[in-house]
Image (cartoon, rainbow, N blue to C red; front, side, top):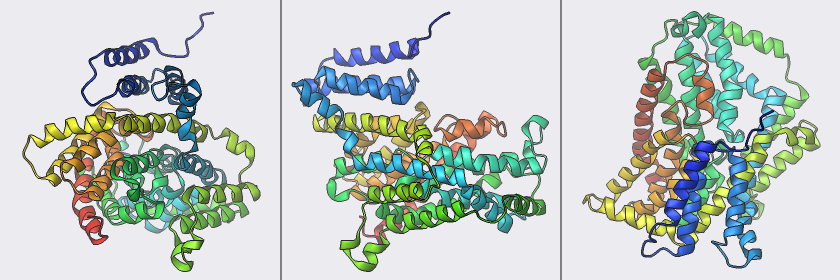
Length: 488
């Protein structure tokens, strides 16, 4: 019996080759040998992740080992391993991991599906109304579903397929144009927008918060509430436009859908009255939103402020104490533990690249290049945001993309005179909006695309148009809103 390797040979060899080329290349002026060698390992790791040489968690274990053994951050082995493991004490990593565990409660209790069916029962008389129902459901689930794949692919997509199927809109029958094509695209394009709106709406957002603080300064570390408040208005405008734009691009053949209301009501009837577990999940959901939004602090003063990660632990503790979730449920939540592992490794490498001056050097190179165009600081910032966003055509992982490019591009934009907080928020938004581009952009995309409602050409066309619409919304509406908030 042939024994399989734990890695894919070709992507692994490519990653090693890239790492060795950088390792033995001349070291640029202003970069230390340690920083340059860490950059070589970092590029190799990112290339391996993009090429899927190993699962991202496994690759991250290798990355921790490489940093610890190579001594690029410290000469003493004991210090090197401490540095390699340093980011596992980062509270933001635990915030996202615990929030993923909490989101399991939405699936287990059925509360996520119930919310979606309730909206469809109210707004589902027209196909456009169903589109808005799916978008609203996605938005409501976003604050406590940090896996955008779980939210868009595991919760919303089966509901969308059930609705399309009830109108005999099935790719296998060639009837996807009835309404399935439109609903599938709404299902998917809700995902990038909702991911912009909360730190806990997609796994890489805490990494974005961390990188902004490193580049702009710790005074600009965004809290959960500050992020949500900043993204509220442009996010809602983008949500309002998205179903209409897609309706114009791919109008459904069936536009009146009175049966959808009956379908949703039938599903709700089958679910019966809210179970005790659903009620507990809903109550904890509300508690989490209130604490993450900083309501106790606003009403009672700073002494009653609760840290965002502590809030996540409160929510998970309540779910465990009430037995809505069991410890076995938590142990089975592989994506949470996987996220904690790979987040820790990537944040560690990004942190030390910054400490060793590599990010500053790369930012300076970008600054020189863009500065040669002779444009204003704000225009330079917008050009860099656009370059950063559309580079996602070459990435199959938002985390890999953000880790590789976010800090350097943001640093360059600010050095060229772009307003720091305005620029940081645009980069933060672009880090999720870029998910719209391709059928491999994030974990949700292959789930929805794979259901067969759209061709690749239709998907890419919708993705590009939505990326333009969303970028304009966040640049214009977001820019005005952030001016009102005195962020620039």
